[in-house]
Image (cartoon, rainbow, N blue to C red; front, side):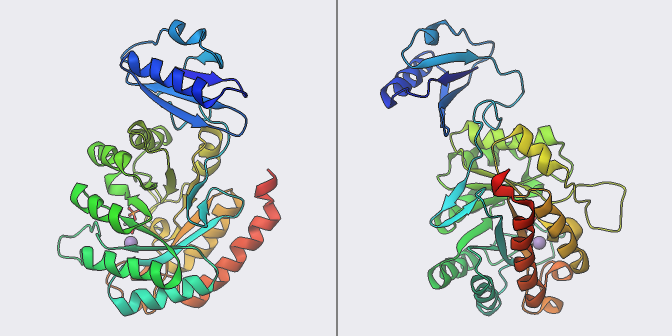
Length: 338
Ligand code: PEP
Ligand code: MN
């Protein structure tokens, strides 16, 4: 059930509805929109009886939600959500470029890369300090030492930091040091971790599970939101198919599909989906043209020596060109006027 408030409902009206929901033992999720607030109800086992709410001041209507997700859907919030950290945003009129290193390997490698990202006019920096590697013998990341280097990137260049948490202890640390908590494809259905991310007070960048359907992807976001954290950014990063010419298969059609079903922003990772440097730019262009709210891109000062995912890292020149192209494509498609 969701309760739609009238456009002129006051804060007090909204509070009264929320308190009524909570007095029955349910959880209330108030979502302000451009023209009205809607309040989602979760925690109910069966259908919710609308009668305690119908007569409350400021209530326009009580709507049954038939989809399996409630909080991620457009029914609850029609306007697109914009996620912000300082002056940086995702889901606004410009697509966001979140670029950086796959793994924070050293102070020098990270700072060199951050300087390029900042000089290109970008506002976000990515870098992994906890790496979920397929092999236990591969570089696992610098852990807290890596987070400290990322914090220095923010202090030096003003870039906002996106970095992955792989379990609950690492999430505690990431929440302290970063601006956005990334949950990777391998944890996309780690429901305990998703709930923990939902209790964090920082936005969550949620990657699609490599075998997740669109509904499973949205329900993963619902796990985060059901705990009260409504700042979720979805990220398409390629799925498993029979095709073997790329590391995963980019599923760009999920971008307009998400836009029609959900108010959450969706970005695209051309690096992890293709796994190949010479395909990254082409797929990144296509995603921006398809309406992606941003890109998550690996770059590296010397990819041949990278400890993680070197073959997909863009060279600095390729990256600068992509940033220009991304802005150009956004102009052509006039996303902000759509
Ligand atoms: C990453 O972004 O560094 C990463 C490991 O991505 P994914 O979870 O999509 O593989
Ligand atoms: Mn990687």
